[in-house]
Length: 113
Image (cartoon, rainbow, N blue to C red; front, side, top):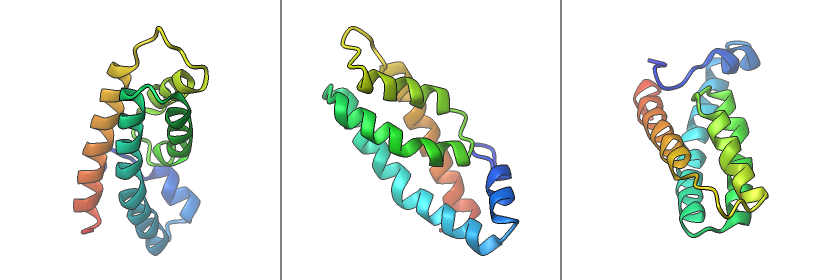
């Protein structure tokens, strides 16, 4: 439990309310993997605006669950925001997608969702 994500901030925010933590875990599973797919497609298609919007949307949840990829996600967001045409963020994207997949699988198991 909690190898690819951390609940420290969530527990603090929720004042250890297990129902609230469960609701946030469900929200994570519903939104973050779908957003990750959109982000991957946006980067691969060099859709800078969508890359920026999607990465920006994902930041609070990724940060709250402490996936360890916030800095990478910010770099991807900035790549889209500033249309860094000559820059390659594919390595950062791979790291972000991998971390999200691992966290998603672990959260699903840990919360029986």
